Length: 136
Image 1 (tube, rainbow, N blue to C red):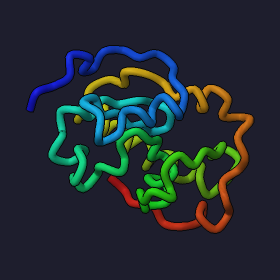
Image 2: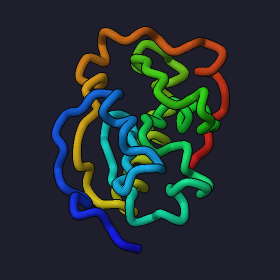
Image 3: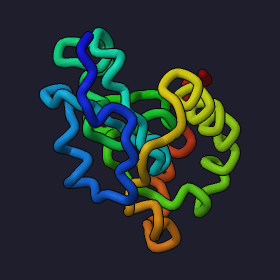
């Protein structure tokens, strides 16, 4: 696959709106896990349009990973997970996901700015917070 010239080039802090420009239709495909932005452009078979993870590109998938369902409705859902005991217990799983993406795609190339103000985010919905999450 031809990689974009900007592949793995640092972005710094960007907004959710800016991240949305890097979806499966873009030559550079990005996603966010707990605010860390990964360049997944090299895995076009998985993240390109029609790939099994194409809906993840251009989005933050943290909430979907935590509740075990990375559906469109669980993308770009922003909560302060430290405001929920159930979510705090899922931090090891989130760390495993971050380690997986770092191992597969290298160090994060940017940061989603909404996580810089995590303390201002609302607590997670209780029913979702108690759901089982998928372990990597």
